Image (tube, rainbow, N blue to C red; front, side):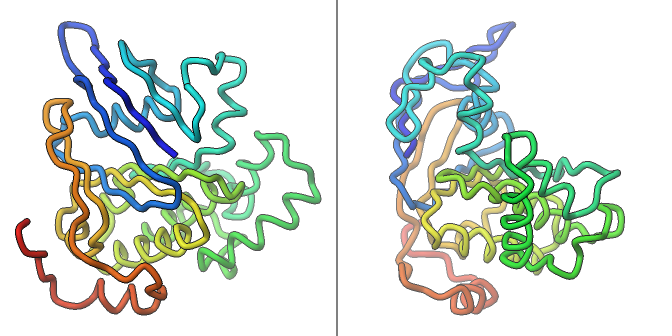
Length: 247
């Protein structure tokens, strides 16, 4: 689903966002991207949505070289990539329903499609009773659920989440990760950039670690059951943390 080959990104004043980064993520994987502030996590995310262009190297998503996508075609490409941000980026003057519907409207969705898809995604994300609420009437966790609903309403094959639990308490963070896990089980590939080491340890998914723009670790962080239900997943996430041996 994602392939970086020798990707570098240099900013002005000699700042390095990425330095010869090479890694790949398979379809339907759930992968964490970790590292200190300034390590290159956000650069990876911005390159994947074509907000930035690499200084060198090759990036492919679903087998397609991103360099071949013209500026005009970027909106069409982004239909297949859902993005979740730490600060939610919701439209304050629109209801939950309208925030999610907007994601379909800007990509050319029909009224029929919107009427069908929006209620479905609100049920999946546990927001059915909040569809007429405005963002300032929601908790932080509920706002992040709206952000995820908006990102997933088109059922993209790839979902990127940049610090999705950064502003949330531990219990709410578990609920958000449970939702992302449920989405992953539908077949969507998920890449999560995070500082939350405790959450990463509990999830026991593959971890890519960046330091000064370089990939310094790539490993499957412990064993987990691939057929784990969302309820079993939540129970494990709420159990006392046991750091996998050797990490």
